[in-house]
Image 1 (cartoon, rainbow, N blue to C red):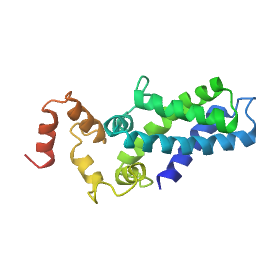
Image 2 (cartoon, rainbow, N blue to C red):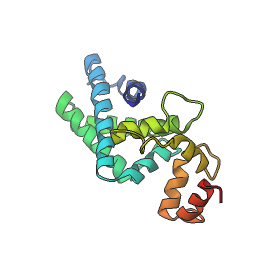
Image 3 (cartoon, one colour):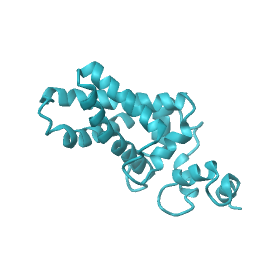
Length: 183
């Protein structure tokens, strides 16, 4: 499911970002969409395998389309630009420009889709299963947990979890856990 949603988002944002570039032919545009989709999924899986789950969740909780300065996003973008240069033969500067435009918007849209109860194209459980390579934490319904952890009622539970874990939320992780268990 994530692969389809990711491909659709990359296609949507890529078309507008590269269609006016005379140095990119129509057939290369299709290749760019394919390579970007593969590299984003691979980059997210790589971040999970390196233990950067909290940082990845922070990207998904972003309510804006940019996360400039985020080292995880920068790593995913760097890998994607490298793949575009190597596999498609794009000039590295053009590849970096494309990736820096598209990737933050795609990642933000993935987070919004996963957190939106009205959007059934992707939910948080599917997202975690796809990038984690298995079940979403042993069959636990992460969607309902994220909804219960949404302290500021903004429709995103991930941002509240990240703030609690990082210590920037009042009451910290223990206050949040108390809220989860109704205390």
